[in-house]
Amino acid sequence: MTNSAITPYQERSRFFNVDDAFNVKVSEIPPHIFEDERDAAMQCATDSQEILCDLRGFIGSKGPATAPLMLASYLRLAASKPLVVRHRASTEIYYVIKGAGTTRVHGECIAWSQGDVFLLPGGAEEVHEAISEEGAVLWLCTNEPLLEFENLQPLPFDESPLRPTHYTSKAMREALNEAMTHTRRNGKQARSVMLGTDVTDRGTISPAFTLAFNSIPPNDFQIPHRHNSAAISLVLECSESYSMVDGCKVEWSQYATFLTPAAAMHSHHNPTDNEALLLIVQDGGLYYHCRSMGFSLT
Image (spheres, helix red, strand yellow):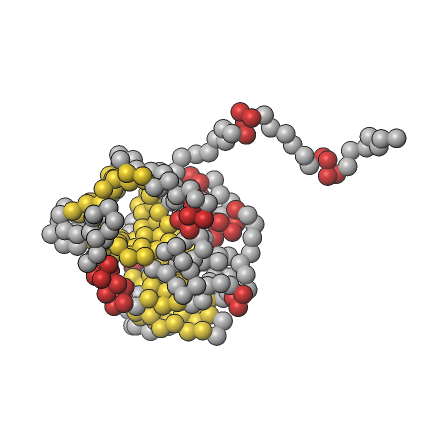
């Protein structure tokens, strides 16, 4: 005899028609440049704090997010005021905008200075401290929204495939200069170098993220292109440089963070006599793994 009682497991089931299932309505995410957040981070202050670049209102995420799977922020470090943070992330990319200091995490200590990049696995308590009298400012990009989306927790520090990794400003500049001596397979001069580690491949810095140190030569531009990964860029050097994103002009401002939404047609332009520099984080590792990067030119 068949038991007609509805179980709690059956009560949770739902069914959708094809039109609803394949036409999910989500809000568009516009290009955006974060200048107020940069200004707050750069001002002199007696307190240390993290300042988020948060677009959750457009993205619709429960927690803070700059792009659906990435979160950028600034860490303002006042002199003699260590900042203790713990991020629900498995990838953390830091750039030193100003000052010098140390980061201590799980018995490890990285001594950093202006222009350096360092990589941490995330998930553990970190203590960031400026050693310069004027304090310091760090920029950070993590995959916190990715873990929040799946309600995941980062691995314990010792079990992460990533290890603390330090890229000095000098080593980065030398690597970029070396890269720019090469001609790419498309006949164009190389203009960027990808940062990686001894445990990553495919040009990624972590399983999910890529990190590029990118140069736009004087009076030149990067041709319009698109890709399915979102891009979060930190402007390092510029004067009157700008990006075109789906027909919208985004004027650069030093140390501002700007978002290029996934699949947006975009190009970077430098109409000046000085080199322009960007640090660009993408969630590209995910798309490489899924064979769905979708890179194309105009």
